Image 1 (tube, rainbow, N blue to C red):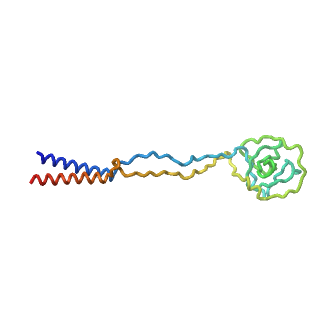
Image 2: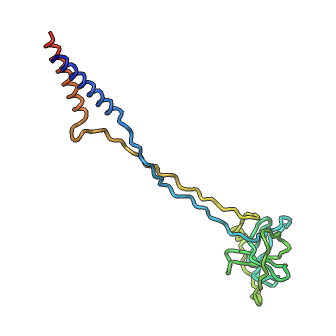
Length: 205
């Protein structure tokens, strides 16, 4: 009866050692909550309103003036096929007030006959009281390139792509039992099982 108890104890210790070894080799994985570290993409819109498209049938650049009349100073040019935002028009509708960055006030006047206006009704605005004396400014032909836009009846938002996500990595440490290495526990259990098995075998002879 005593030998049977020893055999059962030996079998239990061996199974316990094997189970501990399997747990060490393939421990259960902890589910780590992933927190995105990338920034949220932003959408920026473009201004809306009437747009004037320079007629492509023009063979020459269209002059921009600081006053709605030919007596006004020429402050720049619009190239055929380019589009500009319209801020207003004269009472007669023959001159258009447009956005023209790079000049004092950021606006200028163009002859409406050379443009096709879309995107809504253009409000009537009062021109300056008197034009400034005509001078001979130095015109930069590339000035118009600073405000080239794509004409649309409805302006679409522009999308800014987000930066790449920073994905954190996680490391799984080896399982341990307090301050005693798990490998030592396995060796001790297996050794005790083998010793008990030898003692049981010797006493049974």
